[in-house]
Length: 511
Ligand SMILES: Cc1cc2nc3c(=O)[nH]c(=O)nc-3n(C[C@H](O)[C@H](O)[C@H](O)COP(=O)(O)OP(=O)(O)OC[C@H]3O[C@@H](n4cnc5c(N)ncnc54)[C@H](O)[C@@H]3O)c2cc1C
Image 1 (cartoon, rainbow, N blue to C red):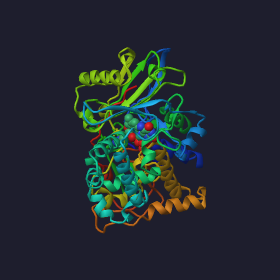
Image 2 (cartoon, rainbow, N blue to C red; image 1 turned 90 degrees about the vertical axis):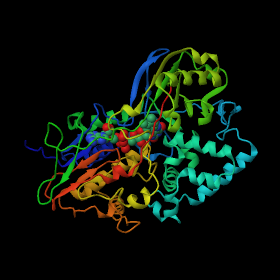
Image 3 (spheres, rainbow, N blue to C red; image 1 turned 45 degrees about the horizontal axis):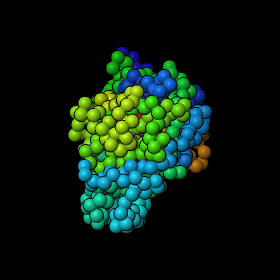
Image 4 (cartoon, helix red, strand yellow; image 1 turned 120 degrees about the vertical axis):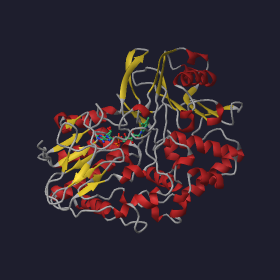
């Protein structure tokens, strides 16, 4: 079989891979770019689906959905593609339930939950301590005591530094809502890095201006990838083309094979768990009753979801969206879960919740090639040993994907930033004249990362000196770009970095 020759091959038609392709195409229209996508659609962890609604049908997001005004990369893309945002509705009472099934159900209206003065004081001191240690998303191993912080989980940090049981429960809920995992599954240094990339812990949690849940995109977030694929050219996007292995060949062209074509293929990232549910209502009865639609519930309460939000569409169709994550996601069969979701909504918002038009779950666990919801997290030790290699190119393979972002890592905005950075790296090899001075510096930065620990498994990866050909990879669960030209040294590229992430997430959405 004769291999097709491309300048750049991108693995993954998620936001990162497609953003990379878009920038490459804008800088050099002559580049031959191929995008290989395992799924039968573009968008990766963003998917927008039409479901029955009060006024017929409407479209809702079942994956990434919120953006914030501090997320400049995604906002610029939204603007460039001519899409519009609208604010997350958050006016009215928010429901807060912690402390077991018999715990008091409280309501509050501010961005901080209804906590007792003692727990509020505890929260303040814990956030202060965390803020003192939240330094950098670029080189987290330079954080003082980095190795120690990376050897503990978020759970162990909370156990040591939170004074009250209530705050410990709150922090568990935060972990499930933001990361989809329990605090015991994540390195504390990773948590600090993630918070630094967002500009602070509170930004991850809130729907206030600048925070992660501030705005939504009219018509859904999958449009971003669809528009990008349109601009790059659908003929260059091959759906249903999972890559199973990547080989770099010294002294010859780099080749990538996929089943039925002249590429080799990688095992997809299957087995990570994500669910997602929809609850479409006749009217936004919660608004009429003075509720915002936001509910937070601890894992001990018997409620399957950890958080819900109002998800009414810009055209006025009422809906709630919610997430079931971490241990709450593993406790229920799907029928039990649905019943428990509905009875919890009735308990918190009233009997009207029992009467709805449509209820739908999206189980991301069953989604081939998606690696966890909403993001891959790192277990203890991973940052110390693997992070130095996270963005560093491996020969002609360049890494993108939101997990490699330095701003809003884990979010759609991070996916765009990472894709654009990987594209610049490819351009620096292919057509350096198209890069500004500032862009050249960005490229140099990502290529001159020092190892935190000498002789780590990652540092033993053989590296190639780049010749006039390269590979740009947007992995983690992102895409990969490959360039095919002359190269030195025979090398099978093992995707150690993918395995460096721990992914045991299981989330559920509810609209
Ligand atoms: C339920 C949920 C809620 C979320 N909420 C938000 C939110 O509100 N705001 C926000 O900003 N972010 C949110 N996120 C995260 C956001 O969706 C992701 O950060 C972003 O979409 C990641 O983009 P990416 O391109 O880096 O990776 P992905 O979207 O995962 O794209 C990677 C692509 O590579 C493909 N692929 C993988 N392996 C292979 C292979 N071997 N061969 C070929 N193709 C392959 C995959 O199929 C996929 O299309 C959420 C995610 C989920 C799932």
